[in-house]
Length: 89
Image (cartoon, one colour):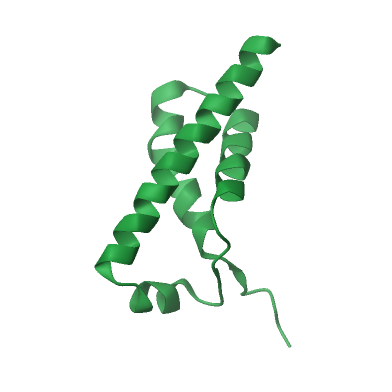
């Protein structure tokens, strides 16, 4: 059996969102971006799939929109956490 295809569907969505928003706007270091992704993912439910296309096919428009809003909120919270942590150091 090959379990390497199993992954959390949110991972690529969160990374894409961080790279398209936070990385472009804020100039965070690579370590900070990785922390932001981890913190954001920890706020979201795990949605494990074998193939991304399977999840995309079965999601309704409403579910997809909610996932995007949840990702945006989780990333914003993660950015705040990393920013506060950096101020303290």
